[in-house]
Length: 113
Image 1 (cartoon, rainbow, N blue to C red):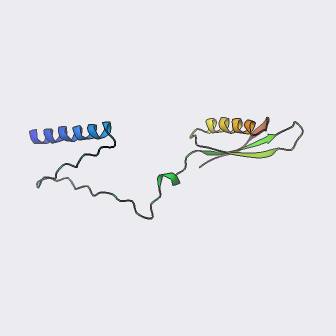
Image 2: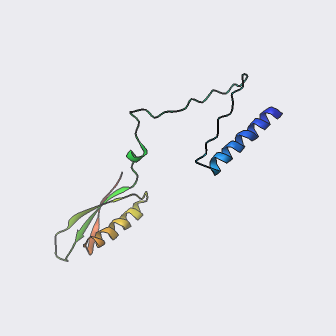
């Protein structure tokens, strides 16, 4: 019981140290012969795995915009990294106004990326 407790304390101390110093990796705990835990194999990324950059979050917002009152609506698309639809819509409206479209008619579509 005391061995398990001391091993647990050492494990928690290593995790806290690793958290406080992310650049410094501690060595794994030595495996004991009577240890029933399966050994952790170091995971290596395979050639077919996707990188973190390939995952996309956010929304694609399409707005109907005009430069003048009696003009035909033009579709304005904006890619937002926000996970909130409302925040993505507000970002798209702000980007449309900065792009020179003072009149924003309505939201055509909001798609998740």
